[in-house]
Image (cartoon, rainbow, N blue to C red; front, side, top):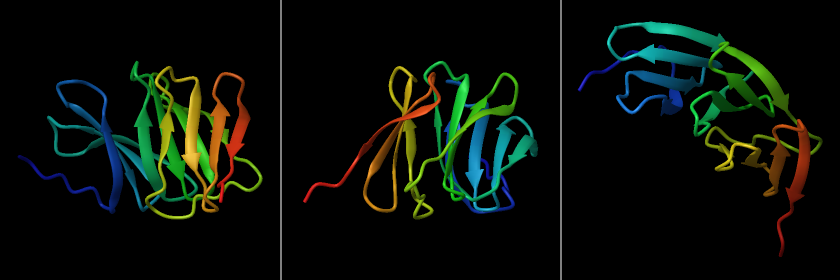
Amino acid sequence: IETKFAGSSCNDLVTTDSAGTTIISGHFDKRIRFWDTRSDTTSRDILLQGKVTSLDLSRDAIFLLGCVRDDTIKVLDLRMNQIICSFSAEGFKVGCDWSRAAFSPDGQYIAVGSADGSVFIWNVSANKLESVLKEHL
């Protein structure tokens, strides 16, 4: 067991390979950090506009999903190490530091809960809001 100093509170992390040599972490200080577990430092990081509340990795480990407190969902292409699209919508609000976003099993959709109890679903390939599931009483 080894401890890595992240420099900021870590809200979520994912591993990109079965050996666990690459770890990606999302932080309170608005950064996504990439770690090689065989070294003592981060290999790179990406600064976003808000605190990172959750991360999810596509099944093929090519795309990284980040839920951000600036009320956006970011999709990063890990091959290019850059954000390729950002999702937001009227009424969508990341209400807390433990808000989670996730890819569908086929990677074609993103689902995330909003502060008002609604679930927002985006179509990734069409780059559009597909549906808003409202709370039923």
